[in-house]
Length: 93
Image (cartoon, rainbow, N blue to C red):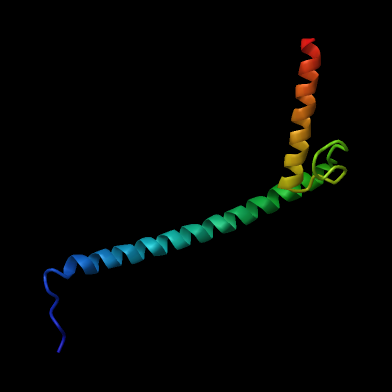
């Protein structure tokens, strides 16, 4: 014989179902974000590699390496910024 649910336990069961559904939605969203991140990393890396850019020799990191991913692109952007600021300082003199 099935037990009848007491009126006090009904909100607890509903809360548990909502929590389970929310957890499932968050896990699915996390999986989508991981896949989207991997696809974006791959696309950006391939486009950067096609450009055949080399990190400047005076860069802090990856000097002389080919720009083929986000880390080498950041290093190249950092040294470009450094050069730009140095040029502006010279122009102000």
